[in-house]
Amino acid sequence: MLGAPEVLRTLAERFDATAFDTPSGSARLRLRLTGDRDWDAIVEHGLMRLEPSNGARPDARLAADAATWGRIAADVRGGMEAFSRGKLEIRDDLHLGVGFLAATSGMDGPERLELGRVRTEVGEIALLQAGSGDPVLLLHGLGATKASFLPTVAALAGDFRVYAIDLPGFGDSVMPVGAPYDAAYFARAAAATLDALGVERAHVVGNSMGGRVALELGFEHPERTGRLALLSPSLAWLRERRWAGLLRAVRPELGLIQPAPKAIVERIARSVVPGGNDGWSAVGVDEFLRAYHTPRGRAAFYAAARNIYLEDPDTFWSRLRELQGDALFVWGREDRLVPIGFARHVREALPAAEHLELDCGHVPQLEAPRRTHDAVRRFLGKSAQGADSPGSLAQGANSP
Picture 1 (cartoon, rainbow, N blue to C red):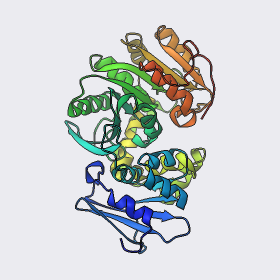
Picture 2: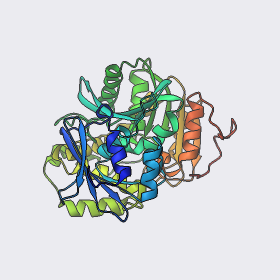
Picture 3: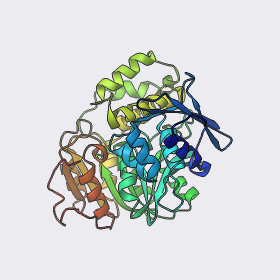
Picture 4: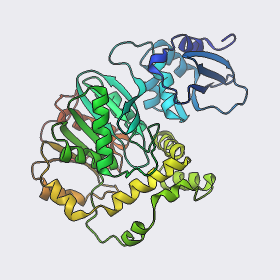
């Protein structure tokens, strides 16, 4: 560590291996301090050391100016706050990048962010966890990972014990070839994760595909689920599906073969996602590409997308009418993937459900975080400082 900036030495000396998960057994994290040379934090055998960057390819990159690194070193909560506010950039492997912040925070209470994995009947499931109180399970969308719920973890951990997981086939969780990757399979994996964590019953928050999985948990395991907060949930299509016949004939295992050069896939992904080169959107694209560039990750993505498109609407909407428990649906008025028109059909199927409409797109927890998290906190049973008054859920807004 000789010669490294003091702020980086401070962080490295606080390293706690119990809060850091290295799937491959070791990791190289590139730390950039504006105006200084790059330093690599090498994690091996449960220890961290700093050395000048030698050009080797890092697993994750973290960059900030001197003032931000100073705040991170001085305040154990500074890392995640700086990341949430865009002052700290984390790229490539977010599991390792956020793990670095968690492991160098110096925190040892229940509020500490921890990254790790648990063994379940479907294989290893990667997760991050923080907070204390009633358990809440967070389920990401298609092509996303637990990273899409980092702001939600930060928003809820003061009142709840929060678990954000990578569903099988995504992020750092198991990616079995030939798994069905449908809502029933994901729900079984989520229930198995609760078993491994020793959690009997949890509230569930799901975005997009994760919202559909949350509903499946409610259908099949009502005794395991508390309240369901569904953020732009994937729902069975009601319109004619023109490509259904073709998709039934095409096997998702074709994803085991790279269908296009990596550079083309990345260019398409960053052009499709608004702001795909900056901020949270860039991080999300990084996470998608990290899995997609593996044969098993591609196969899982294709299988899950295929199942979403092909789900039988008659069966789904009949089951929805029988859903037990309380549900909150959060809709984005600018959502092109799950149009807000679905809200009318949900109201007909579930008259008692609550609804929140926001001026955002498909990922409310990232695009309208304050309103989304205030509503979710209140719905799950905790009052939030500055939250809207009861009864105002129908009023849309787009606030940071």
